[in-house]
Length: 315
Ligand code: SIN
Image (cartoon, rainbow, N blue to C red; front, side):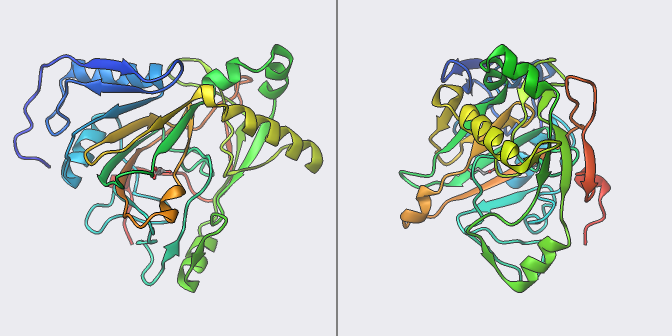
């Protein structure tokens, strides 16, 4: 923990980046303990803009954890891929990610497509905080999309139809991934499967979000496989319409803080066509169990909820 955490008092400036999603926040030093007003202002900006960005915040791992802890309880770095040595709450996102939790396990090209973090769990993290350290001079941008505006922009009959549906989210190794036997074994022992509502009511704002996490949502419950596939393709194409998205150009010291209850995001794949390295670190905050418009909560079909790192005995 940083030694002198004194409350800062400067007010924040919030600069929107597009019509529906993304804002840069200026006028705050994230290495310092925030005032209650600053926490409230950042929270309000997060709820409104879904993902907020900070520039030139050169945080240590300790400061990253301290900043995150002002917004909720931290999870373990990653339920499957583990955490940075000595920092149970920090997940390393490097170009060639390693499954650090399992000795001898390596995962190459672990990138998934559009997704919301850990939706295969019954209580996916409510927010993620990603810190850029080694950033390519070009390439490597991340994109986010606003799932609330995506829901709002469906036609009224389709909104009414999807309101009553539920989908099964499953964690499996990403397509194109390769790994050691130890990793494959470790992953197979940690299967996560959850039935979530297809439309999630945001617990803080009451807004409805089209809760489709393309990489993890495998099928819609109660319809035929062909119907499920056709409907999911329609919804996935819809939620990634460019006007619902923002694209962020990283710099060393950049931080992205997003609301997983209202967004999906896309990690870059162009970095694999470039020789540059890329290293970021992520924390995630413990989330609640999603609830649909009919009041029905998600149901865990396999695996454990994502607990707070502090409450989990590390092995
Ligand atoms: C993530 O999916 O959380 C990582 C995004 C990125 O590497 O840009």
